[in-house]
Length: 215
Image 1: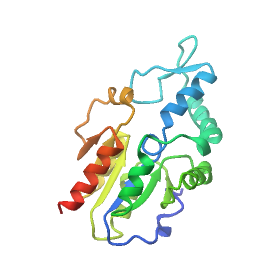
Image 2: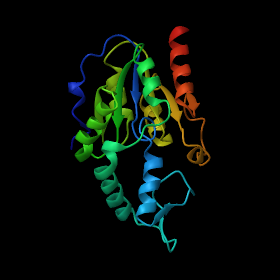
Image 3: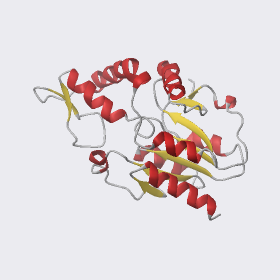
């Protein structure tokens, strides 16, 4: 089974600048905001009990959707809304500024069948950075990307488990746990299992560019 689409063998043009591996949903694209609107239109709601979809999506009678129902719902959401998903505040401006000093690679766990839609959405927003869809943990593909040059590699994601997977695989990769949605941020129990914690793209920009200037 393929781990990424396309294969990371197709990742070219990585020069000797530092590299930023960047998640897409809830880091570049404001998944949660658009998903909440989608849920409301489908007479569903989000419970905000934990930092997970499972157990938190409920019907009007307060009964939670099953894992299989959530999987189908997410697939339908991506099919209908990937191309027009709104951006997280400051993402485009900051990435444009960061890209002058960093190689940027987008690594997203969007289902493979929506790769082309996500690629089109990135292009539509003038975010034409190398983009790879991923299955499962991101520690392995991030380590592969980190070996493509001798400079520092950074990883930014809104998922504590994905940040943890990178740290377990390669402690040389610097990590930023980025939770821009403040309601989601309140649900994070362990904000220490990362090199940096951030709630805005302005802060991400400051972390990355300051580190480069000071090295």
